[in-house]
Image (cartoon, rainbow, N blue to C red; front, side, top):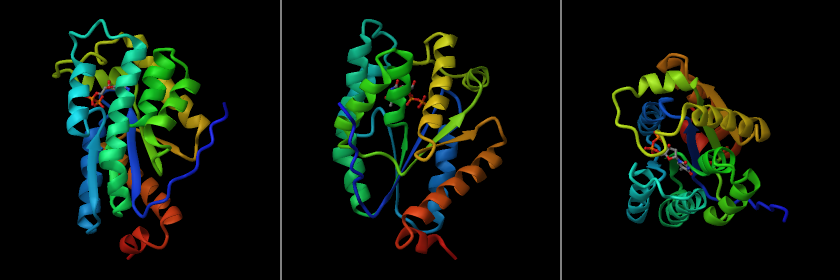
Length: 227
Ligand code: TYD
């Protein structure tokens, strides 16, 4: 069946951050939230899995290293259940209220981790994402791209969760998967080289986002940002 995506309209602006492990998403998201706050713009920061009270329970199931019996299909459906709840309870109402919503991971993580790396199929995960999200996709998805070894070196102090314990070859596929998606959907998805300095990454992200806000939200948000 052909995917027909009718874009939802709302006054807010929706950004997702994606990428492999240890790429510095949380640091960069923090900088971006501070930037919007400084400009007096209403911003909500959220994450997947676990952006709602129900989602937090789903997150525990998904990331607990003891759950080695979880099948790939069940894993995908749990990420999608978390997302369906997240969209309806939190993201969509915030966008309709005119807020900027930044999510740490969203639909492209399922496309890459489950669709490509777990081999459940990109077409399948895209269709299921359409259903789970009510066709709500970010105005811009930013992928922080980093060589796998650099990402894991940055995480050396951390206790690894169920997904992070996958083999290095799995994480190589994650990186390739995100790059593949960005080539397939160059308008919706932008890649930022996360091996640059923190300041450089921050500047590049701000440039991409401001350009997109200017282009798509000319009358509302951009006016508040433009000098
Ligand atoms: P998390 O602790 O939120 O960390 P980070 O985003 O910093 O990696 O871990 C979420 C994990 O879940 C991460 O390994 C990616 C994985 N994931 C999927 O496999 N599919 C999905 O749809 C989502 C949202 C995440």
